[in-house]
Image (cartoon, rainbow, N blue to C red; front, side, top):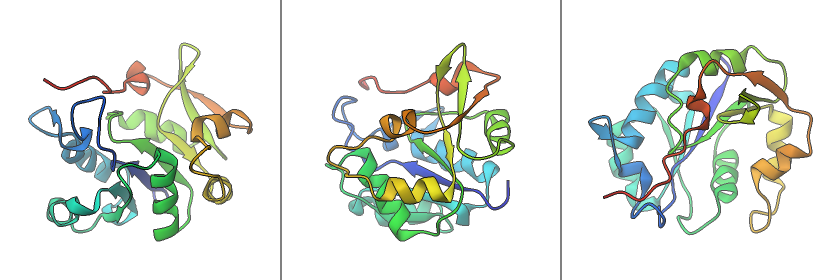
Length: 179
């Protein structure tokens, strides 16, 4: 999927989850490690842009020095993290996803990539993730007010191709408290 970027939002504190979801356990690793490992099968690590907390920067660079690690305010809204990524990295058609959405099925990503324009996966009538957005749409997202704007609400007002997903994995969100 050359020419495509991935924007992963992982800077949050995970207050509802009892701690940052990026560092929570997932299949014998941290969720962030699992995401980085999978995303490297979607595109080259140089095309992966990840919003993280500033205090994690050294740890993240050790995890993958080729990924673009961009610091964002952990107290900020998800849209602010996405905007930080857009400001710091090259603009191109990009997948956007949160760290707690483990869509580790390459079929979903390939199906979206084959769709023209902005695209979102759909399973049994429900939209999921990741979303794939054009550079022009990302330009518009960069201009939204992060205090009041939300990407999902913004996309409801746009023409977005709904792509049938081969799995319900697109609906998974690991937003529960860790024990």
